[in-house]
Amino acid sequence: MRSSTKSPEVTTHLEAENAYVDAMLGSTAELQQRIFDEIKQRVKETDLSVPVRKDGWSYDTRTVEGDQYAIHCRRPHRRRGRRSRGRRGRRADPAR
Image (tube, rainbow, N blue to C red):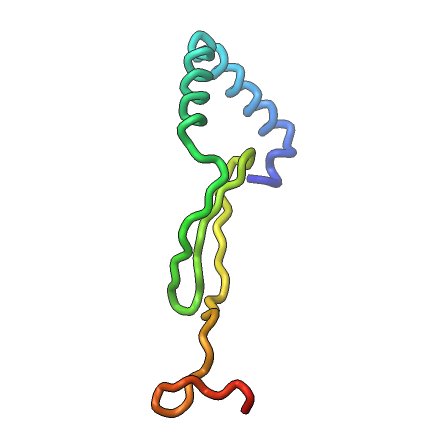
């Protein structure tokens, strides 16, 4: 619908819908704002989920204060801090 939002007919229709909603729900504007403010106080706006590993990928979600939607990330999973092991499970000599 992105391309059709530039259409004058669509714009006129959306403006009419918004005017109707304002007329019907205008008396609840203060209540809506109080509820929104209360929810916003209880929600941590900047947050990062714990990465989940699946099929060689790490998935996580983060939110940034002021952004309306979460950011979903997918990255190749890399093991960190592990060195290759030699025979019998001993660590390989790094000098070799």
